[in-house]
Image 1 (cartoon, rainbow, N blue to C red):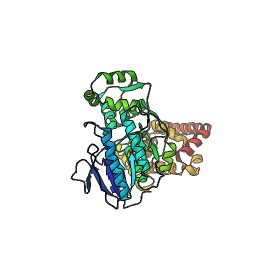
Image 2 (cartoon, rainbow, N blue to C red):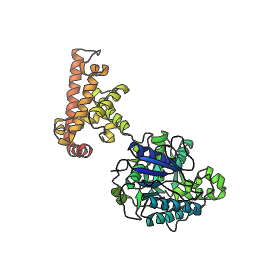
Image 3 (spheres, rainbow, N blue to C red):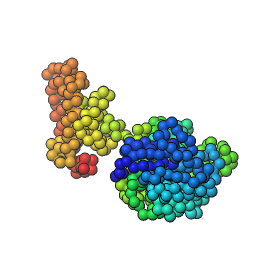
Image 4 (cartoon, helix red, strand yellow):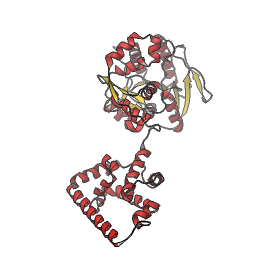
Length: 429
């Protein structure tokens, strides 16, 4: 838990991560001072800071934490010595102010990194550690605005008719930009041992192909079939073109992603107390697919009740009903029930409803029934309004209903062990 009313200084506050971090900090009631190259009209407090123009700094004496996000823009000539010197001045100013230093490093950081960027980040980690601060190595940051490397990848998927499936497939550990912001704010208030390096990303690595495919299906909402692309071909192309074209084509960032070293994140995530959101959920524009999953749940329950596709308005009423009266968390219905709502008959039985862990399912199914009854489609379904009647038709419908009820009960009895497992896994809290 981050204490309220902290004074936090953020370098690179106008960048991809910095914007989300400052927004979150202000929402939580913290005072934020931006350290950037240029002041912006929205900045209530601002301190000039340029990595390529090192100069001694003075920070407010009541500063609680400094979160160092600033990086050298790709459009400007990068001098590692200048960036290191600027960071040294920042670290010294942080110590004089008695504040805590949090440095956002890179997954590529190591002493023997093949690039000067990775070696520079490792050197800064050592500098920050000796001063009593800590460093955070994020995995592949995604979500939110289409900026940084994430923006390059989204543009690539949106432009190309296929998704490149790199061979051999590189692995990434995704972390949503808002989850990373929460981790950084937590680091600003927790006394970690000096020199701590936290690795933040998904506990299980994700192949680059899956990451790009998720961008296509969830973010871009287009079908992009994967096509094999040898990594060697990317390396050759990167060496053939000049530095300027290499940067414009995004080859520099692409190669850095392909050559990422892996890192373990499980223990560090537990130390932060943050649970990362699933990739498919974070990849949505809102960063959370809760309402979409709740709508899919409502569609399945209402389709089961009405024996027909529900109207969009009815699904929206179901979502509002659950959000205002129950926990807004969707039930994790297995995909078979979402695709084939008739299969919900396996769960809709007295024996299943008696299970303590099935109470939420029973409530939501009853809510779907009540909502459906108040619609025109519901009147046709339950009251047989505007439907042909007659003794023969009635007998046929009655026989069909008895037959289907017997069939589903036999099927539920045969699959009871599997159904019980689904119920306990899905709704037991």
